Length: 416
Length: 105
Image 1: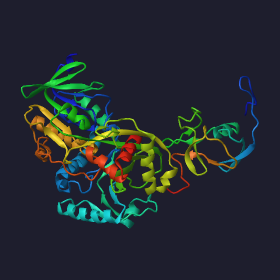
Image 2: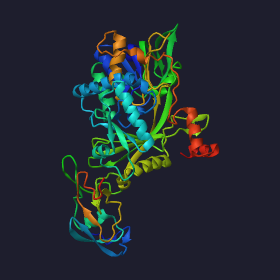
Image 3: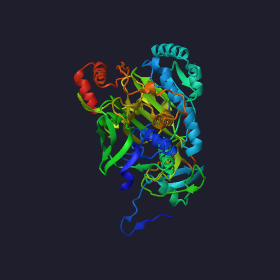
Image 4: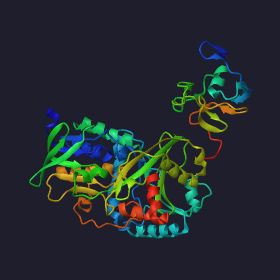
């Protein structure tokens, strides 16, 4: 097929980020082919909660606040502009919470907000219990100490965002090729010359690997930490006020909910990897009933009124972190023409801005002010210590500690 | 209207007679039959109004998949009446849009 013989840029991965890159490049008149292994938004983009949270996480790399906010704040502006340009993807800025459920957490949250203010993140607010309950009235009797609140966060419909971006990209001349897995990125003398897929070779000047959790499978140079998460959706409910939130229960796990435009409540939580220790599967797309139950139970402890609400679907998906928590965006050293875009724990909070960044790099025309160097995939990337039980080794240790015994921990992992 | 004798299924099994309250009106029903069946027998075909265009909806698939027959049953919206057995004294309301929850959410 002639169309697939040669092009300027090949984008691998048809999620929100990949489609955004294809759209922004095509808009500048560059020939783009986007390859996707399954269907558009069949990876993390279609499995996420659609929360646009500009800064997730607590103690972990608080020092990198500015770096991450650079990107996500720009993205927030761009999403609003995009919504006028490409169509309605239900983006609403309704704020997001990070809730403290213990005194200890509350104290650390207070300190964090202080640090964040010092780092120039003035938007973040500290709310006490009364204010938190006022904005989010569906809390039950469970003790809430307070929360961290960012009013410009929000949620959107990730399917609509991805498909609208893909449609707009096609309108500008991009080619979208789904159900076509890229087997290999072809190199010649330290220079990338194209990709090989089941329909043959495609020559390209640039290859953008936007496969997030699967990025290290194609580009060995980057280290990605895949994280398996689960999600479920309830029947449509009348509007509950301001819902996107994140909270840690039992001190370690992060859970969240958000309400879609149609009223369905999206609930998400950690799904630990399946398989044996040493051979964990972080890409398991099957969900077990016990996982759904565990996640629902935790959240019902918080919102007792949700006990009567029916869950209509649940699923599992894989997102990814980088070892130091700042995404990889940019060229791989010593591999001319290869760009990597990966390591988003919240792709919706980066998608629009990343498209622009990559386009800027390829066209060499600057129109935004963020320096891309801070996201350089070739940077020294010391592993930070995750407070989450997310990293391969610590996960197992965490469970062992929690259940006081390694054997039980193994059993528990196999159960869920 | 009810079919008391069916050429294949035979005679209608006799069950205890009960009453349901539909939008304040009392109707007769048999215990354990789907709520939707009792409503159809009583001539009630509009079970809910759609959320966006507020159009009438009724039984469609009748096997609990399409959720077109959902009503508010004893204060809980989105109950699929085609697969929910009728019990004596149930309070059933036509659901308008997403419905009103009796319990505070």
